[in-house]
Image 1 (cartoon, rainbow, N blue to C red):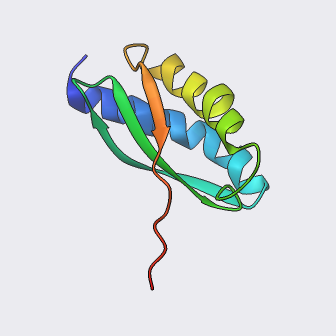
Image 2: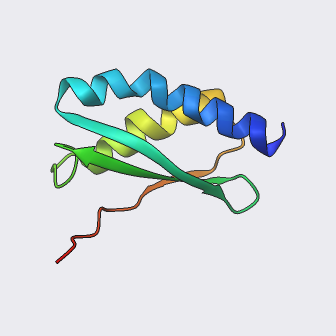
Length: 85
């Protein structure tokens, strides 16, 4: 699978999980795919920021869905929103 195909599949996965996040007032966006297309960086938004179960959501929801579409992905990490002064 090419890098572009991986990105397309990751975006499809995020589109599948997004309605569940939005139903709880959250959202997610893709920041990038790195390390030879094995690491996905995402950013949880809205109610997902600071939620006590966001790591569980990331692992059991987001990561599992991404791996379903792009099995070569090894890890999904959340890059937290940086506060601006």
